[in-house]
Length: 278
Image (cartoon, rainbow, N blue to C red; front, side, top):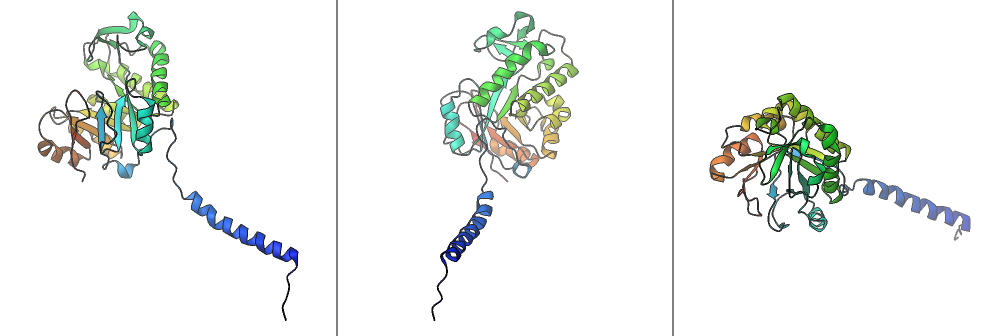
């Protein structure tokens, strides 16, 4: 004897089957990890801090084929198309911004009054800035950071954040620089950028809680690598470069410390010779 189901029962069975399928699909969708969209701060998982490969390029056409996880690039020269291509390859992008100096060739040079410009800086035609004048510097620096965010960067490295160590033309003290660097790190975070400290070795220990990563030049040659350990101990990446010597000579030291290290030319073009990962 064949039993015929009523139309209502058939509909109910179909609804229940569809619902069961949806229940099974929801966990699968929830497990997908989405990439951070442009303008979001770059994450730096502590478990990966010792395993990044990086590239630092400020001259020549950006080479997207470099085998590196992290790219440190110039804020102005780098185009949105270049950052889009790198992001499509799941690269982490750091924007280099000079926060303690201004160059006559900078597009926003006119925003820094003569009163806050001091002695000649590191770059050609550059001047150190009076970092005590936060009221004057903050609006221009915020726009420099917005430029980075608008181009798809998720992190910013603060260059020339150590004017107190040089004859800047201003009586800058250790505490003046410390307060300024903390303010700039906070400004970057407020604009959804992950802040990184470039050089400023004497203040690394004090500033480790305020920054997500460090960028260092020539700690081996200058015998300063040990001072970068507060970042390593906190599970934060240290991106290190040497311009002289061989990787065979310095990689043993820096990789042992837990740094992401490589050798570059001072022109910071596409060429690099990285240390092997542990």
